Length: 263
Image (cartoon, rainbow, N blue to C red):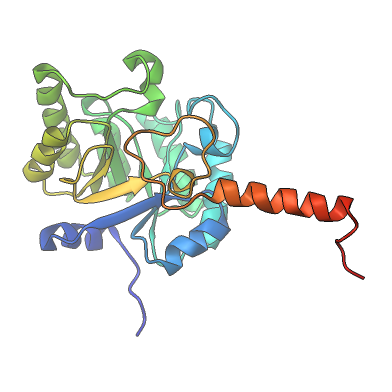
């Protein structure tokens, strides 16, 4: 039986039916193929590629051209999942026209099927404008990495009553602007659950507890490939970094001792 391609409407149906949504990041065709074979519903080409693959300190340095490069690669390995790409910093904040052009490039040139923007009320008009040119948009609230200097580091958001109320309002605003889903990152579980109940579109949690409609992780975190700090909410399902070290050292030892290649 042919497996049906995931679409934004399929995700809405999953929320209505109480079926949890799975999402993971990918930055190349090889990982995209694995995620597709595993029937992960959403594959995100995250601007986390900056930290994870490109050696940047944060996501702010990532360029549109770099996102296009990685989106094209993931597209080549994707057939089942909904392919979403992050719009990097300063590609949508300056003007709606700028956002249209840049989002359009990610869809037309990169092969993305949707884009993701960070923010609430301040990006609502941009989301509406993208919808008018038929570009689906995923929202992102809570810890928004592109605002890391403003919010003072990687820490839980929505901890005061005022900030909780604002986040609920922003979620409703994003829903009204036309997003098909919202990522909720690093917020209290009760707040994530409240937002999930109050909006009709799926919430995808990352460090936001089990009450969201789905969950997303950075694939390198899940696979145990991340160097340095790993967020507390991450569950590492494998330790590939250790296995790679072992393989590389074994190769080096066999070459040095003339055991590889065998004659």
